[in-house]
Image (cartoon, rainbow, N blue to C red; front, side, top):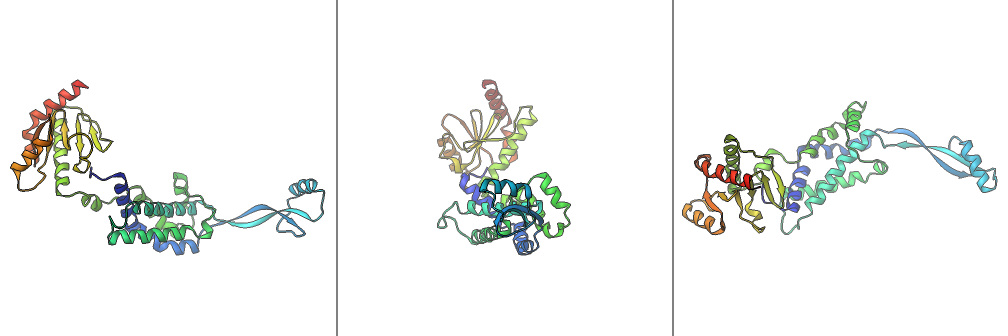
Length: 300
C-alpha cells in the first residue's frame, strides 16, 4: 500500500508501538508491577547432605540413599520457593517482550539512514523494556498471551496492578494508529488510494467479482485489479492501477498534466494508459475498466 520494504514496514510498526500511549503507561508502571508481582508458594526437590532444607521426601530419600550406598545424612527435601510463573506475570512478560522485539525491528534500519526524535525515543523505550524483562523475578516466567491467561488476569485479585498490561494488549495487536497510517503516504500515494477505491467501487457497481486484496511480491491483487506502489517500480511490470490491459495512474508531478500523460505512456508498454485524478475521472473510464476486467477474468 505504501511501497515500504519489509524491513522498513517492521521499523515503522515497531516505532509506533514503542511510542504509543499504551506502551508509555506500561513502562511507567513496570517498576511498581515488578515490586508487587503476584506469586505463589512453590517447592522443588533438592538433594542435601548433613542438613534438612525443608520437608523430607522419604520415598525419594530412600531411593537416593539406596543408589548412594545408604548414607544416613543424605536427604531429598521439598525446598520452598516463590513461584512467579503465574498468569498475571506471564502476560506482563509477553508485553515486555513485544516491546523488546519492536526495538529490534526499529534497529533494522541504520541510524545514518533513518533517525529522528521518535526513533530515538523508541530505541530508549525498547532498552527500558529489556531492562525490566531481565529482572530476576521474571527469569522463570513464560511469556503468554492466550485467552485463558488474559481471562485469569482480568479476574485476578491483583487486577489493578496489571491494568497497564491489559490496556497494552489491544495496541500490541493493532500497533498502527489512524494518525500513523495517514502520515505513511505522500500526496501522490493518498491520491492513488482514492482512485483505487473508486476503481473497485466501479467494478462492484457493474457486478464484476472483486476478491479481497492479497499481497504478492510487492503487488496487491484483487481479482482482475492490481495495485503497485511507485516505491515498488523496480519490480517487473508497470506501477499504478492495472485492470487487464488498462493502466490507470494519478499525475506523478502536480501541475504538469501533459507531462504526466506523456510519462505514463512511455512506461505503460503495451498497456492502455489513462490519467485519473478524481472519482469523476474514474467514472468516465467505467466502460474501459469493466471491459478490461471482464476480458481479464474470462482469460483466466
